[in-house]
Amino acid sequence: MKVLVLNSGSSSLKFKIFSQKDLHVLSHGLIEEIGTGHGSYHLVDPSGQLIEGKANIPDHKAALDLMSALLKKHTGLDQLDHLYGIGHRVVHGGESFKKAVLIDEDVLETIKKLIPLAPLHNPANLLGIKIALEHAPNVPQVAVFDTAFHQGMPPHSYLYAIPKDIYEQHGIRRYGFHGTSYSYVTRQAARFLNKDYSSLSCICLHLGNGASCMALKDGECVDTSMGLTPLEGLVMGTRCGDIDPAIIFFLNRTLGMDIDDIDHLLNKKSGLLGLCGESDMRSIAKRFSAGDPDARIAIDLFCYRIKKYIGSYMAVIGRPDCLIFTAGIGENSTLVRQKVCEGLEHMGIRLDKELNEQPKSDKAPAYSISASDSDVHILVVPTDEELEIARQTIKVIGAN
Image (spheres, rainbow, N blue to C red):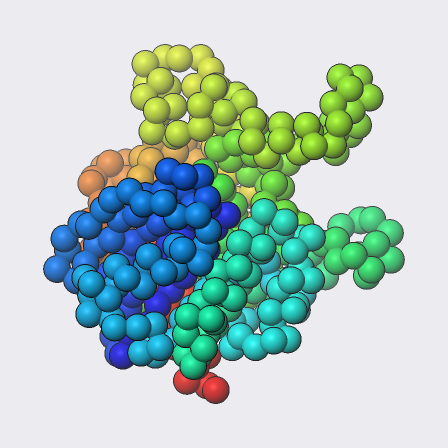
């Protein structure tokens, strides 16, 4: 039996097929530029062969039709109704979903009601679910929420100091994101350390174009850097992260920018892009090494903010078992890992520079880059959100 994982974006459809028995990846692919008139697709079949091409993909229904045809032709999956289950990534579950759930009409309606909290993501996620239900009405389908992992946070972590009735009526609070990634990498870390998950304490850094930090104590999330939206927290590729809220008033009153302009500025034109003109850490690191001053301040600021979060989270959870680096930058940037750990020796965090510089193994579920005298394990754990969605999908279907 096979499990399909779908991640439906506003103009893309990412998919991966797993064996239900051992979670082995059988095939994966991506359909892009949906609705633009310049659609493209690629699929990696069970033998590892890449199939790619261009196609007119007017909408998500056409994308799912194309995916079904590709899977039938290249993987032997005759129709989606033959699947064991389908797992869907859903960005925002609000306070309604504390774990992955089997999809029914009530779940669909709740995801729809949560659209104001994630207007860019939940509509596309919901559309993908509805079309998949039309294609495979007899297959159990599961929603896995990015926010669910953080729902165990205590009120003093997730509440903002605003009037209580605004929170109660409109749900304005810290939710946190990257939860599916955190669920996967922290469990991998516990296995690596041969430690029971319920006793694991760690600080995890999910560093990519979107970046966040999370504190885990005794197997429960106690705090995370992203808030009501993914804009809060660390400096990111194009997002500003933490700023003085009064900057918004200044931009409006002094520069005459309206709310939409400010939204676009802080989400799309700020962060690393705003500081040095580009958002790709690989390019910025090359400029940093060449002595470019804008690249230097961008990386210094990026790493400094991460250090501040590490320090604040250690004040909350005490000395953790491990510090985890994951996602694109966390897994690949030796420079960022080194600069984040520099100066944290007094907190028991000591990096081994040689281990940090060694090429990573794509097959390693986790590896250590900490010095032999480090009191805190420093781990690099490659994330796999699709695998985690497949695992949770199988678990929910089995329980039902």
